[in-house]
Amino acid sequence: MPERRRWTVRDLRRDNRSVLLWSLYFDQPCSRQDLSETTGLSSASVSNVIRELIAEGIVVEAGSVDSDGGRPRVLLETNPDYGYVIGIDVGETRVRAELFDLTMNLRATADYPFEPREHGVDVVVDRILACLRTVLADSGVPPEAILGVGIGVPGVVEHGPEALLFAQTYGWDAVPLERLLRAGTDLPLFIENGANTLGQAELWFGAGQGTRHGVVCLIGSGVGASIIGHGVAERSGSSAATEWGHTTIMVGGRDCRCGSLGCLEAYVGAEAILDRYAQSGGPALPDGDEETALAALVELAETVPEAAHVLDETALYLGAGIADLINLFGPDQIILGGWAGLLLGRRLLPAIRSSAHEHALSHAFAETTITVGRIGPDAVARGAATLPIQAFLTGSAVPAGRRRDIAGHAG
Image (cartoon, rainbow, N blue to C red; front, side):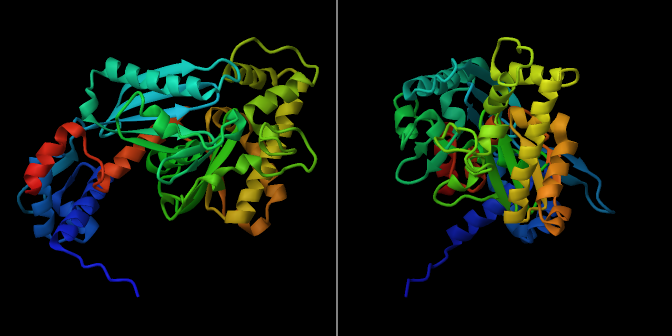
């Protein structure tokens, strides 16, 4: 029989601190009384922990509000300059980085595109490190003020002694991305599947707020999904469960970049949509990257039958893929995200819903809403930045420049 853990006063204080930080972060500004009511902690416990957090510079007072017949209530906020976070989106057409303060105000961005199909390990690592250097330089934030760097990547992330990336469409197999990045940075790194970071962005700040059981679909060059269960993005030892794009939509169908046939990605990923249109005989699209080309295709569909036919088929396939998610998971909400998902969703949402209705079980479909994400095309990077914030709220991430202060207060 395993030995039962003995809880100490320090454990209790750490847990109370985390509970209060989570509550304050999402409900700020709020008073000590509000925190006590929300968390169920006693007024004395709240006051003691808040006193520590103010002394450490994590929490600041932000004015007051009148109370019912008593003294005004002092409002509390997270100090935005206590620490900073960086979110990086490693996509198939570019690497994008965004630097935020602790309350997710954007301070700097960087964007480094790839040449078509230029996904060598050295190239991707170089782009990530270049983005890091750029946002630090442009923001003026010193490295010791950074809580951590979240990185959203395509493919499967295996979390073990070191993070390994299996990105079949890149031709990557067990690439030790974290170890390779260590040659250029000693900042704390949090590496996760990009669909999961997109899901966390929508869960925290967008269309997924309040969702108890949902699915966030990432549609760009490729296709993925993040399962939201009980208010958190689910993740076990790896993120393989998010590879929705490589479920079979057509037996013996189109070649997929993963090497299989008939995958959903081979029909509704941006690269596949543009390839299907190129084979349709319609007018040529303007030269440029995939995002420019797909936007032009959507506009062309208003007047060109070949473009309209390709998008109609895309809505049919995407709706059928969503029906599979509905039948398998019974979510209360499905959110379309990713740069291509936002573009397609705004144009095709009624047709996508119609196809999902046709292919899903009627009762399960009736319990599900299908919407377009609210965050925008930077959702993967924004969601990646929440990974170090999540570690901060649970007490496992502190800026290097603040560790001495924490040690002094703990003593």
